[in-house]
Length: 257
Length: 313
Ligand SMILES: Nc1ncnc2c1ncn2[C@@H]1O[C@H](COP(=O)(O)OP(=O)(O)OP(=O)(O)O)[C@@H](O)[C@H]1O
Ligand SMILES: [Mg+2]
Image (cartoon, rainbow over all chains, first blue to last red; front, side, top):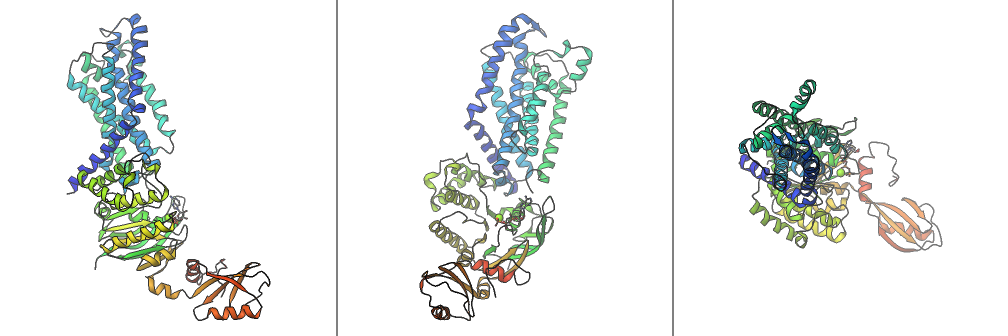
């Protein structure tokens, strides 16, 4: 009985979450499509043609997976961060807190919503890319698993951010000061192997490097790091972030006085 | 009989050290219509917050239909429908969505939830607004939306935290009728209020809370019996300002308004006799509805020195 109740509750949260970003699609789904088009025009056509090849592919094809990954990361993160924070702000999070919804269902519901937005935007961005480059697929499973795990990771990150956030400013600090730099330095625009040894070493502690490279492997069949290591990194992140999120919600940090 | 709610030794100290509840005990029988009455800041919402797990308790025990919230939190929660004091729904969602989602959190299938939402929206006169965003409702409509939401999983016990705050007389009365009807169907109802009149109209049993302490817990009838002073307001012809009234405690509010406290043992006739003696003519007279205040002073003030001057005995 409790298990069927949990499934219905999970479906309700996800339904609400998906409905939310669909309702405000102009803010959630359109900007990534515009952003990626700009990247293509600037880095692909204007600058990219002068760069020549990277990793054995023309520059445009090389950066596509990273650009898609970038939108997946920002969208899964910001979806949960803003939705959960606004639920706290408007206090409608209490609707879930008073109901017999176990904490893992709350976490799973919000993460599921964030993943849905991340993957939907990833899909949209991929379609836009097709107007600029020929998308090739080396291994579809690697693509799917990587995008799913990456969006889950950042959805969890967004949730933790929202739990701690006390104001709307607090949910833009991490994306601006941590996520964006890590993404730009995460091998979206270049192959890590081009860097001097020292910076290659530093890059290896940037988790986004593993996600971008695993994703690029799925499309192009090339990667700066091993696929197994990439999945291991993602796995470790998901387990740790999930554990942190569960502890915070169970303790009621930012939710119960 | 099984208690719908059993609270013992409940304490709450908020971060920062404020002690909002100082060890309260409360039992609400199944099927009861129970009032928790108290002034601002008494600890009503804190108590309700703990029962519904929105506030962490500092000490004590809470059982909902025999289920301890420390051991069987989810079962306990499934018995309760909550109408909170502050609006706490997503302002941008439609009424229908808010209700159906809420039912979902309690495991109610979507199809059934849609039917129930229709039923309650119609009963509470919100059906035409079903597709509007909640922010477009008036204050009274928002209150009713929260009542509908609390009923979506057909709870055994309904807890309403000041449901009639900011609601006009007419709507208040229809809400009362609605709640009475629910109670007749067997739902245990607990409501907090500032108005004794509301508690009197609806409730069978009552607890009065003040500064985190239960100062009275009894049935409505015995409580009202304790209320032995009533205050009357006299509008006077502004010719003669009264001085003291023998045997009565009274206050001159302005040149032509007089308040007089009349005990059960006294009659209003004697007030008129007194006024006549002073040659004062009365234009009109009304009952001052501050019985709650009087009640508090009677209950709380008897033990402690109170600064309130409403009743001088
Ligand atoms: N989150 C909080 N942090 C600190 N103190 C709090 C918090 N919530 C309530 N209090 C304090 O606890 C006391 C009781 O508050 P509570 O909201 O329970 O009162 P109440 O009886 O519901 O009052 P009202 O009739 O105004 O709604 C008040 O003094 C209030 O300032
Ligand atoms: Mg209150």
